[in-house]
Length: 136
Ligand code: CMP
Image (tube, rainbow, N blue to C red; front, side):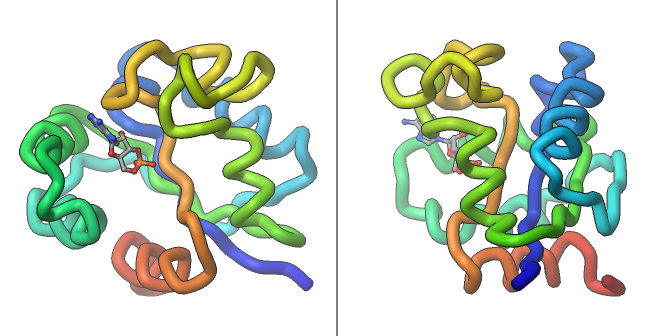
């Protein structure tokens, strides 16, 4: 059964010219792109997107970072798309958790600048897709 997940290529990925690399890996895995948008992120959208991290000490930095430049938002589709993209992304900490061969393992060094975001569960995918692609 096909499902959809929200993927963000964060400002570090866009600035470093890694958009093509990320999209290429998504496509090579066999997932498809249902929607894609390069955009500046409004603070209100960032706050809602990361609402679950509101109480975390890094929340302020996280908002600053995600609104610091353009991001590419993607609705990615396919069988087990949520888990499949998280496998491609690798663990949140690019050194301690992400292994080589994953996007973060290959291209990132710091947890804050970890290149991509992917929804972590069906409920968050639904919520995040509504937020980023209300017309989808
Ligand atoms: P993401 O998958 O987008 O979900 C939450 C984000 O918070 C995460 O990726 C990281 O970019 C960021 N994050 C998580 N833990 C830390 C941390 N300890 N310090 C800074 N940023 C963090």
